[in-house]
Length: 593
Image 1 (cartoon, rainbow, N blue to C red):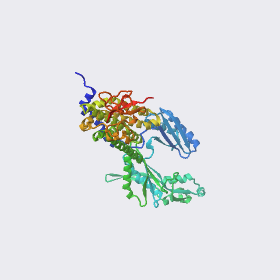
Image 2: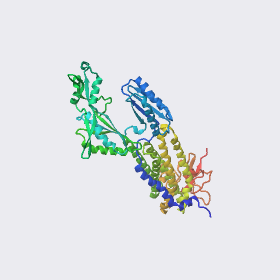
Image 3: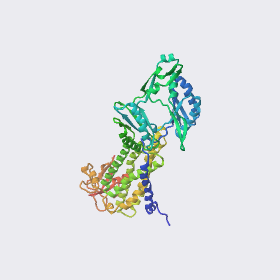
Image 4: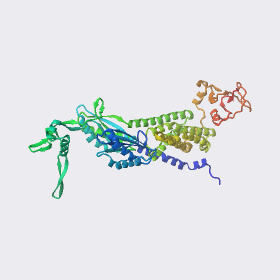
């Protein structure tokens, strides 16, 4: 018993194949609802930034006492390629660069461990901050707090103690940064002459105020089976308590802060000034977690701020001045528009030339099906919707719809030639398998090398190339298997009995369309002059059983094969071209040099 051919096997297992192709399409719809949305791909830049703060030490001492010991400790970390530092008065910033492909989570932990080991050698009070560089180090949303009646100190307190706790609880938010405004403080202006008269120093005043400004537990109290903690609250919460703070005890009395200094309310020095809408303002910056959905975070933040707006003091306004999610939604809208425009144009082309709603519907379903299957791959690789993946989808729309158009055109043309014979659809698809596979593979190999680029270029263009290549692969599978199986069911006898040439084709090739042919009044297709720069149309008329020659035709030097269009022969590479006309057959002859 002979084994079935591939065409026969596909025909016997059509339901199983359609079901297998339908699974990734349905899975893609579900994955699209949970896939993260961000502006940039989630790239792990091989860089860690270290910030060191050691008070007000001069830059020369910072280099010797802080920067150099930390640099020496970092040099032992594996896969480290470069260490660069910048030192200023009381501060130092060190950038550590690793090889591309390094696990940056592990590298960051190693950096922290190295700094902790070196901390014993650093001056007391030195603080360090380690930050892994990735797209999430920048805020995705920013709001401003402004008011013409509420002071900046109150605005800053609103941002720190009311807005930040509320926004931090939103899923996907990493941290809330508050910038600008002023911090309220009590200012003590010491009179040096009075200090000298009492035999005191600035340090004595500072220690006296610090020791008086404490909150501590002083004991416990048990009553009725309950244990209470006794707390001594000596916080200096006003100008008068600070004035009455004792600095020194003398035989004839005490020296208070008021005796040697002037106490007043003031604000801490601010080295950064923030303005919004022409007024001093406080900025609320929202940072997302790696892999977070920036669009959903933006919606949740806006909803929370709308809820809390009524609880803020009168005259305080909250305005959005930066929203990264708008760029993402714009990119998504461009992909949507590309799909819709491509689908509409493809539908018009198919309707004009094939004149069938059924085959047009088949071709249009290929685009969303291919993109939906591509989303499954993005989900499996922990990728997100971003400007690169969405751009790849937009670029792949034209290539995907092209596969469906050429396959549908091949099927309809062959079915009409065979008169709707049984098995004609699958046979036509099998005949076109190799050209379709070659065309798809030629396009895929153009984008695949982009996925192997290194550095930042590979980090950005890798998702784009993967999206385009996977879309083309899924498009090939759907066009090769699903389109013929669907066409076999949907293409009815009405489509197979239609003429292969429609009114638009006849108008294009007619004298009124600018392309003179054999007979202007003929309903059959006439020769287009673009079939070749050195081919000219000839008219022919049937003379007995011999060759078909029109009275006005010149002698032909080539033979012609009937029932084959000009475009068919150009596609197959043959030089014998003929087509039906009103007077018989129209032929293309090669004009002499």
